[in-house]
Image (cartoon, rainbow, N blue to C red):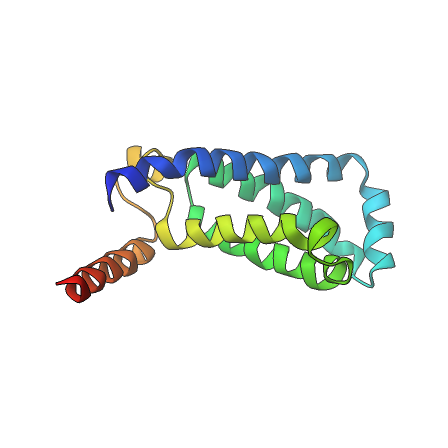
Length: 148
């Protein structure tokens, strides 16, 4: 992966991860309210705590750059569910634009991985799931073949 992309993912990962953490942590301080909200949208209230936990742990994984692809994929599923269950009827502006932005960031992280400044790269000396990186390199090679 080009070094610019490798280092450029750090601020994206930090902001996205902190955003998920910031949205997940408050849920633990009003669990009963969250249960009520889930019931109001016809979701099992038992899903509230696992979803809050996903946002906090997934956000932390993204910030640190460990299991980034898995955390991002799970958060994509959560954001798609939020759009379909709650936000879609509100339209784009003031509705699902925020979740869509987070989905696009997470898709990028699933494809590109955590980047050079990450626990996967510095401590483990490799990406845990490098398949996305291989696909990106194949795409780059194909693009160069068409330019020639």
